[in-house]
Image 1 (cartoon, rainbow, N blue to C red):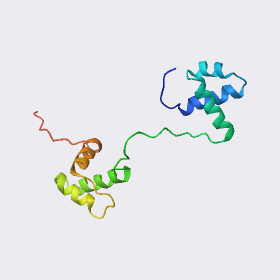
Image 2: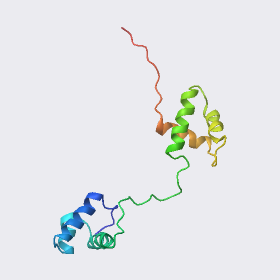
Image 3: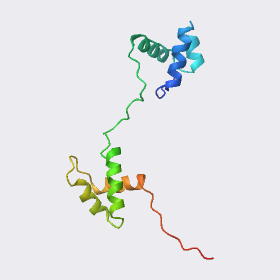
Image 4: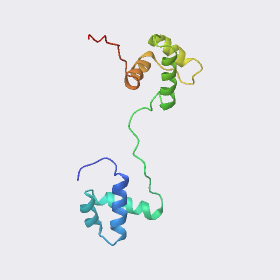
Length: 123
């Protein structure tokens, strides 16, 4: 079988339940539609008590702006809606442990805040 993403918590539960009821590895793999190796790995981890219900980490460098940074940026924007990206960058880097570039701030603004313009309605 081809490589796939991690199994969901529901699929892990189905594997554990099916194997506990006495199903074979092949039957369980066909039932859950995954590989035999995945069934063995999940069931062995459950028996040892080391099963993890987390998604695998993403590849690449860790994000510079986490959820806390996004909330802080949102507060800065709400305090001064007419601030430029450079002003927001200076405000975010003030007292921060990691400095962020203006491109990172701009990209974060595009993903977190949605800008709208008022439109006059003609009646």
